[in-house]
Amino acid sequence: MTNAPIKYPNISELLKHETGILSKGPVGVVLLEDDVEVISTILHTCDAGFAHVIVIGVEALLPSEQIAPNVSYIVHDMMSEHALVSVMNPIIEAATGQWCYYCYNSEYLFHPFSETRNVAELLAFNTEERRNTILTYVIDLYAGDLEKTPNAVDLKDAYLDRNGYYALARYQEPDGYLERQLDIFGGLRWRFEQFVPYERRRIDRVALFRAKPKLQLRADHSFNDPEYNTYSCPWHHNLTAAICSFRTAKALCHIPGSAKEIDTFIWKNAVPFEWRAQQLMDLGMIEPGQWF
Image (cartoon, rainbow, N blue to C red; front, side):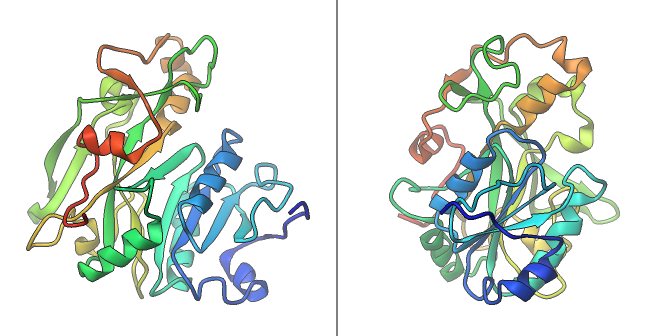
């Protein structure tokens, strides 16, 4: 398809003109912060098996051609204050009852067995497990040669950290330690923590969830419903997924303070990323739970 897409100012206008697009899920949302790997992110999200994909960003970043029939576009500056909650919470309200997913450009979803099973199958199983969420870990990707790719994004020469991840029980005043909630750390945000504000160092994100009335996403990627922030149900472990992301590497190469201090992200625990969910399972980064 080569026709120019219609770009709407908000979710209400989109639903007014493209009626019924949220009547069937799951729904994917791609948030555009810059022009890096926009098309590959959208196509990866479409190929994952989402029934509809909503792409949000300033008009200059939105594709000028309709790259897939199940993709819609909303104009919004994702670098503005409170951008995440201001676009996602209206979508959550409009998509009540549907499974939703969100990521940024240059981020790619992988779940157990994603080479042979799509995201709709994943979510159908999770629904049978009586779970309304799937915890995702944001696994940092980075280019092997920063001289060749100064923005650290290279899909053909991508690396990740094979270890160096850890979890802490989540603590919140005045409740103390929260049941079945963890703060996960690791990757570039851990290795270069001196350049990352503490509140942005976590790599856990509940990016796959079922929308329901009064559900609100918060700026730190958590929800106002405590059960939505848990890693598993009380009776057994649940499956997890990963978002393989160049986002942190891009930021570290862009921020003046870190950019002049970092000449490579490669270290002894760097391994080439194979773009396979099986590699992530082998490394223990995602697990299938009871899904065989």
